Length: 202
Image 1 (cartoon, rainbow, N blue to C red):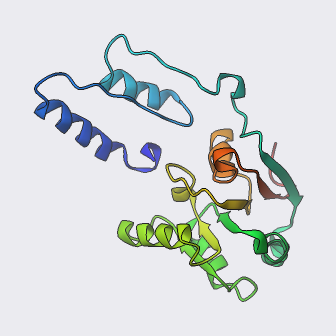
Image 2 (image 1 turned 120 degrees about the horizontal axis):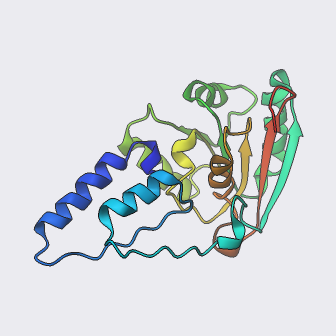
């Protein structure tokens, strides 16, 4: 979430807390991944003798073990039909998040005549209060398929997502870990399907 534009808000909150507390407050920072900018944040707000506890030290650059990973070589012109087929086969079992790289792509999936039932979209052009309403509706099972950009890849916990579909591979490993990690929450199992084409380099 910090990397997606919330860093300034977190800075403001932490500075405000520091100013109003009569004694130095204790800060605990939790993050699913710890890139350099997260360490910088820790250095700014944690005590000089801060410690890092890595609960996934044996899982560096790995995803949760209960996720079944499937990759599909899917040309761009077949993507909508393939996604529609996957949602028909897998999607009936539970809730699904479909990740897109761009807001325009997310909107086009929402408007597709092949994928039109029980679906809503969430991306950065949608107001924060509307995004919260959409997430609440998704958590309450008011619809089954959430089409989203990376605004839904971090900082949210929806326990019953059975399937994640990425309509193309993300640009880095960290993003893949976060996206796929929206399924298989709290010891459950889940599936992550990623579409790719020959233009993607692995």
